[in-house]
Length: 293
Image (cartoon, rainbow, N blue to C red):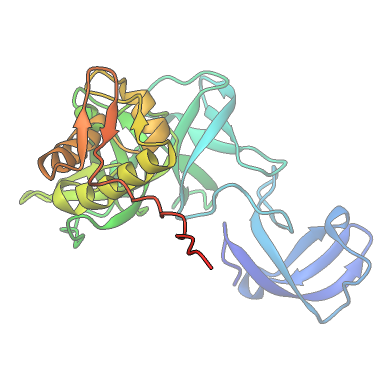
């Protein structure tokens, strides 16, 4: 039996005018259309294909790989909307993916980006998309550790921040107060688990928190100061975007690192710049002394 909506290694049964017929086991023969057939394919060999249903609900194979397969969360673009049916999404195949009306959480328009989960409809056995994400997320208490690096898919916006799918399994929150700039729905980013609350909710961040974060960032700032000749035009009034562009962290993290360096007397904080103190700067090597003959 072929694994619908995923990659399969299927043996070639026969070569016919429409293409190659593959052995789908209990599903019978599955056509790989002629346009995907290469001159080197031979009867009896295995071919790696993605199996889905065509417009007439027949199983069909392709050597193309969609942007998302069954079981995946993905951000896909709406290519058309039929109000009584649903929205059709571009997912990298010639046949667009249907997001049924009943699986939508808001009105959609052509060109919108929507985060969905790809699934097989239990009744029709067709591959469909669903934007009702909570139905597919893991509700078991997560086992993430504080400061654990995780992959995030930004999937929505709330009054407090951005919801993000953590490791394709759980839902977490990135707070506006910890962000240097706005995020895009559908954006895939690297982040960190700030904490897992007793109720199982996950607080997220784009950089590490506390001392674990401040120490390496402090060294990064010192290295940048050294490379710039001892001073940089960053200070308390620098914009979050400028700090993110230069150091890849939030302004909150940057100010924590500056505070730690200031207390250690490694830097001076001026109104328009930060400056490396002489005792923290690397000493220049003295030229070798000449001795008389």
